[in-house]
Length: 315
Length: 315
Image (cartoon, rainbow over all chains, first blue to last red; front, side, top):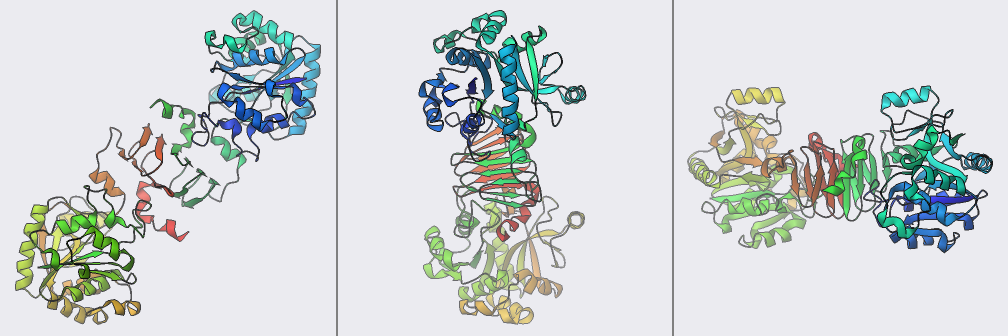
């Protein structure tokens, strides 16, 4: 089995500790190793390093090669511009060549790597046998509104729901769409040809003329309506490391619910995420904030507004 | 008339832009000049520079002399340790010598300097004539709980009230105690002798054995009960620059009530005080905060907890 890892993050959601030059896949806050390092390591025993392909942005190729010395240099390919996951999956399939290919993202955590590898082998077998795109469905642990869902029976994809719908999906046994797709290369190509012909066999030189469209939207939603998707449940402690909210999940809290990384003085403050990468942070009487310092920037955001981080860059 | 200016601030309430090494009287955020510079300048025409005496902490003597070149070097006296205003007033009276002496604080703003000088001349005359300590009473502009009050008829001093009492004081015509006292040196000495004999004619060498006690508590409260205080109202736009809350009074606000000094990006944030002295501050969706950056520290405090700043230093 081969693997394509999408690692094109722009760094906005973990700004200012991540930046366009050092986006979150290079952060080593989660589990000591960078997210991209973990993404490769968890494939050990399932995919050989020479069969791993990384699609990243052109200006991160050098840093990615340094971070992943066991992956052949030519397997690490830079996109000249961002064209969303539709183009990136197709480019990955193009460079990976023939055989069963698994598509993954570098922005994810998997707590139970053993279970993940086991499920992946099951998925590989299914992909070898069936003309479908196999997707791993994660058993939800809460009614998330930040993930898409999959109906495991029909394979139907549904978009990020509101809270009421999320609860209904969980009652119905829907799974989270983790963005992990396994299929033979010709099955990927046929799906592109049918639903997004402009994305067949994308190469780097094609990027300027492509539109931005996600792989889910371009291919998977339509394919799932035609029974072209097979869902394999995966109970592996998966999570998307989407924003600073992840600190609340993966770091220990003090007795008042604060997460602290680096020098933070906290007085009568509750449920804050405090990440000090340069100056010492002192919190007094505040709650539900994310406070992050770097030598150049200080972010002070309300936790419930983290989804709007991009607004800071439009100013 | 001579003047004693108490300038012993410890820098805690404006930390981290002020520090023990550079306390708030050296800050130039209010009106362009430092507070101690303003305190001296506003006495022009009433007190000659050679009759101005500054009581500060020993390690600030050098900086104070530099900031106030027109004040004779010997008039700037350093306290070896902090012993509150009781000791500082007595030391000031000791070094100032004979005549009418006005005692002031370096932590104050006066918006209408002309009115202040006029009132001061009236107070000087009264002090020359009467064996009382003359105090300037400020007409309140709101029911402050952070200031003491004075009954202008009896001269009685009352301590910082709660909000209900503050409102009652305003109805009764009480004035704010601005900590400005004018009297002949022998009247100060007699008051110390009567109510706080251990504070008569304090010299620097006496400090180690003195207790910490405020001048109001050691002398003025008792003196006011014996009709030894004369109150002269002063309508001069006075304010104590006690904490970051002063930024809300003296700086312009943007359309959402934020005060910004230095590079601050503000997105859907309201009524914050944002002081960027090193890294750029980005606020997202937060309100009623004070956020201050210096190269070494970042303060994030709830506005309504500014009175508890000291707790940050006990950690």
